[in-house]
Length: 297
Ligand SMILES: [Fe+2]
Image (cartoon, rainbow, N blue to C red; front, top):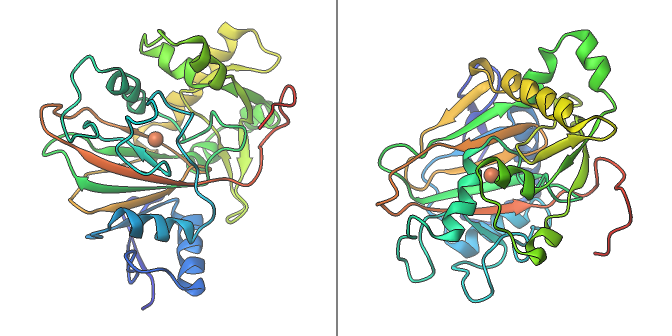
């Protein structure tokens, strides 16, 4: 079949048909999806009743996957899903709802802040692929913001000022914003800040984008308060309504986005109902900026 795309928003995001994600994609299908995501940045595939194995196979068609082991706060034996899944559900491995004060749940509330997946890794993520197995009956939308449109709308002086700026990203910074700061020394060590350019150029579209996230703690060479005030300004600019598509989940939606061109956040939902969302993440292939010091793999 041939991929068809119907835009969902004036500047980005499209609903895709003609692709069956439950079967391995042909090289032509992979190329068509990559062309579509280079253009639209967010792709919505409706009614994709995937098993975990099918989601892994579909995702691996686009490159190596990130493993979540060692980057979150779940301990070995606590994980509900294969380590190539980021479990963004509100249930545990016994399918019980997480308690309100559950540490994994509180940590996961960081997903309510605007971010780009894995910007806290030296080699940040390329695509995220999120399958809605059990969706919230109300709330729980995922909002996306187009960082290319946000960049394009900046004035020329700001574009010039930010062109070569480099930011520090860490999970420590985003969790501190919510008052989640009871991290162990071992967790803090795994969350050591990494450096990312503030302006990226997308290899597929050639478009520049703002590489923003709530994981940013400072701009290299700037006083921290000035950096945080400026980043906050840019975040407000970049998430204004004209640049935001809100995805309202239907069961078995599969949403794929390009972390190099978008930010996203989840909206509040009823935590007394299960919400089972499973994310696979296609790894990036390169750093956006030199790091402060060599870090052992
Ligand atoms: Fe995310």
